[in-house]
Image (cartoon, rainbow, N blue to C red):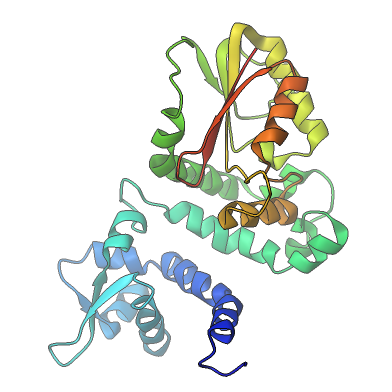
Amino acid sequence: MGSPQDGAYLLLSQHASGFMVSQVLFAACELGVFDLLAETPGPLDAAAIAEGLGTSFQGTERLLEACVPLQLLDVDTRGGRAVYRNSGLASAFLTRRGPRSQRHMLLYLGRTTYHCWAHLAEAVRQGGNQYPRAFGVAAGDLWAAIYRSPGERRQFTRGLQEVWSVEGRAVLTAFDLSAFPRICDLGGDFFQDPLPEADLYILARVLHDWAEDKCSQLLARVHQACRPGGGVLVVESLLDEDRRGPLTTLLFSLNMLVQAEGQERTPSQYRRLLAAAGFPRFRFQKTGGTYDAVLAGK
């Protein structure tokens, strides 16, 4: 046991170095590797890429080599030197101009979320988000800490738009919404601002940010504004009822611990929240993607 050939040890090694993999992805995005290759007619070698990025040759060559087995770049060595081009994955999701680009969300994860996760153990000890510790900001208003600058707010907002460019169709077609002629996608300061009257309110990645009391407060405001016969479409990553998966959702729930006040929830937890707020007619649909859909009627 414990030898490099042992499957358990190899799995442990992969888990331990997982942060290195994410940092390769984040660094390549931040430096502009994928954009440079997308804007060049043919493949480039490490020297040309380093010159184009204004980075060191030694560091660039090592980063490019690591990107190949991660399927972020393709390499061709038939001409006696290694030349690189974007992989299919990078072309689809990592270039600035790609219609399904996830670049802004990845930059936000690398510049903000990653630093909070460095303090996960402390978050578990304290039971609270780690913005003060990660960035030296004063404890207080959560969202003032999360959005430390207008630029960071814009980046996160654009990142959410990128996520929905891939995930949006699945959650919006999970149910027939034709019975709701007027739909409101809630954002902004929904705890303070008047809510417009609508037949259906979409809460996409909203409730998971907040503890139970805040969720109840928001849903009560939605119920008050909602037209008779209306409802709520909740878009979140749903935990299995036994809370043993999916792994991505369990990690998202830990992210709510280090970055926000809430958690990911099971369908039955959302059922209770919505019923208590006056939305007793409840259905949920797993989409097969990262995010699922809950539809509750007034």
